[in-house]
Length: 129
Image (cartoon, rainbow, N blue to C red; front, side, top):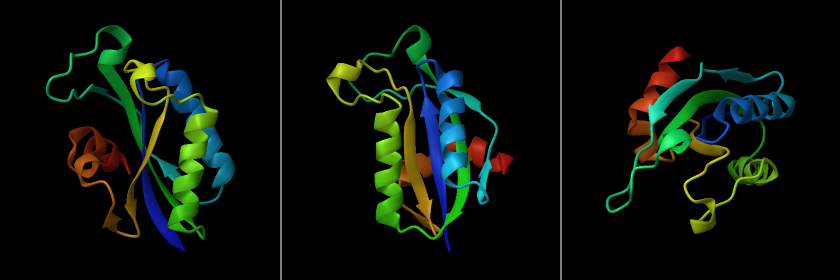
C-alpha cells in the first residue's frame, strides 16, 4: 500500500473548487483519505512578476493523506487529468487564475516537491492531520 500527500490549492472561486476537488478525491479513494481544514495564504509571486490583485492575491489550501495500491505514475496522471477536467488552464493564458492545483508533495515518505513541503501554507494544513 502506498501512502501519499496531495496539496490542494485554488485562487479562483476557491471554496467551490476545493469542495469539488474533495468530492472527486473521496470518490476515487473512499476508504483511505483524510483531509486537513482549508487555510488561506497569500499568493507567492516569483521575482519580477506583479503581485496579483483581488481574488487572485490569495489561495485556499488543504492537504490530504491517501493510501492506495496505485503506482506513482498512475496517481500523477490521475491528478493532472482531474485538474484538466475541473478546468485548469496553464501558462500565460491562465493570467494567474488557478481553478485547482493538485500537487503530489510526498510519496511513501519521500518528498517529491521540497519547495512546497517547506512552505508555511503546506505545514499549517499538515498540522491539522
